Length: 295
Ligand code: CP
Image 1: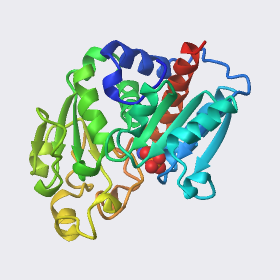
Image 2: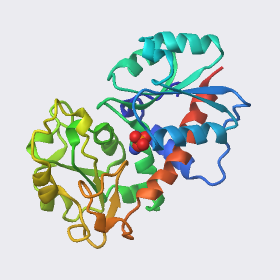
Image 3: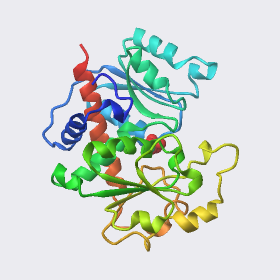
């Protein structure tokens, strides 16, 4: 694996191997031997950026963080020119988060070694993979995941995580249900994936329920296409509507009181911090596999 841009780049065997390796307590990983790795974050991030920084440190590499503020992105330098300059400094691998939806794909096609840390509303492959690592850590055998249902609820149209999951679920046999108001139903992905506008129908019998943040910044103008109070009334996950045996997930950051009721803050059904923990392990494995494939 020379880059990771999309879940579509991975076969079911690749997916299982990444997850199994992330969960292997005795794994050996690449030693970066102080090599720098760039983290170019042109949209806000806490979990993805910090876990990739920790992953680079964990592989004995040196993370070089570049954000829009204070870099030549403010002077309209392009991503490609930035990568050419970083390459000239000896940086071979780049983790990128950006608004543009096909930019990281183009850079990979041009021969750069890139990891997609979230590109607009398109994909967030390492988030879906770390979610899967979390589910697998709770499920002894891969075959058992075939019997599990994951329900993703919320602002689907804005969600690169849900979109990556729509590609990932069929590769591992997880039954995926999507739930959102009509205004937030994705129009350009998710064909063939079960979708409902009824929360009760969506979460009934689901083993895992993942709530999504309402991404106000991605909706056009100030219009969400619906009233937020209606969304909270009809779609918010709370202590009462989450089944006693269902586990609660969220990619973060959480807007408490919107997609999740604050009564779930200390709920023992939450595996949200386990997701964060698995993120570090999974991202170390992704970087290790990329470095192992380089000459
Ligand atoms: N889940 C996720 O991508 O979080 P950040 O935006 O904080 O990186």
